[in-house]
Image 1 (cartoon, rainbow, N blue to C red):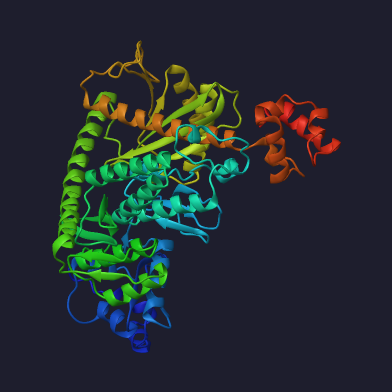
Image 2 (image 1 turned 30 degrees about the vertical axis):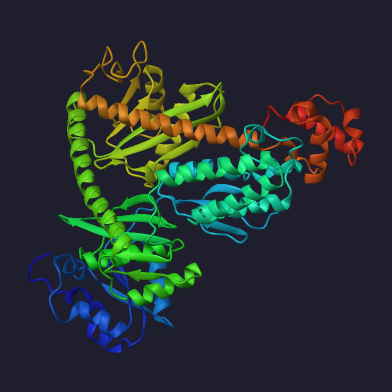
Length: 618
């Protein structure tokens, strides 16, 4: 922006002076637009008149704020009944429009929780992402899926609460493998009473809430009672539970000074880049931390932290306490809004001591480390992209690389993946999977052609940017099909490379197939360009396999019986119980099926036909 630019000049078209004079001294939200009608910034205010006027009058602003104001063509305001309503409206508008000058978090999948169903006689503990729903309780969040699944495994070993899908649970006629390996008490077939199961659930909840000492003491009392009643097998099981729980406690960092659910949040800033670290503490036990790199904003640390807190915690249930190095503006307002969302008091605290100070130090260290690691990673990838451009004779280093792979099992549940890398590494929000529909099972060539065609049809429509380089996991055949699909869309200038494994499929022996080059290009094993290609190719492979497994497991979890009209849960259960499962049911004749209570001739014929003719079609 030129140094003599006037912030008010851009807003003359809507009479700035009259507009500011008419603003009410009431709470609300303001939106700043450029000449094209794009929202530049969304903000909230206790008093709209004072807050909006401050952008165009008074003291000079920071460079980024002046640059934003110089683009403003008009301002719109919405008056709200309270400051909390203004805060919530600001959050929703930022989430919806993602303005350039607001602090924005990466739009990624939510954090994992452990979910307990509270509306069932035999509740289930399970891995869960998403918002809380009626009839459930969530414990977490956990910093990673691995940490969540590890906790679920420990709970299965300790208390044997079921973790199977409800549809699987409802249709069992005999206990599954989890019962056989002592990870479940078999509630699906009535091998445990509702009272005993409820006690196991209660113990699991107390462990999730960090009340391990209570559980150990309770288990000790029950062990002594069982021993006194000469129930030695039950006493031995309780003894083993106590020992396992104490072993878990000895390997975890648990603070005796503080309990409850606490998040410690710290911000680190360097050269205009921000990193926010959140350390999670549940029941006095540290669960690890996560780092975030907010984009946008007006480069004021206080504004970055306030924007992060509102966007992060209004999107999920806040813990009892959030520890901060310093309180943001309107901290009291944010506390009220978070408490309303969470259904319990939420405190924002600074100047803490003891265990809380150590948790805050941990968050501060992780934020600083996050910036260092991001800078180092960016430098490494930039070097690799430059080396890749040199190896492939590209005019410039590509700033966007995409890679495709296909995964299936003997043609079943075929999935194609597309992963995207940029100067900062993987762009996971741009990853895509394609269920392959129009190809012969096992035809990888046709799979690549379909996936590339579907992907770049969207690129041609402007829904996604065009990459500087396209990698295809495969050799000359896959390369040929990818180029054919691109040619049909008119993208003949896109540089495409087929990445084939070497003779013995070892890393470092990859052959790169290019359209106008014979023989294939083989890079040195220590080449930075090859390391980047391997990383992108392996990520595409991982993403494709994960999608394939999910699709295959979903297909196998879905019972063909569920699609038959007139065959409800009770009749399905009777059929499975009568024949010992789906395999025995497939071997039954129509006459055998009619002998089951509630199954008439017409329904039996439908079941027989679907089991013996419809399964392959599914």
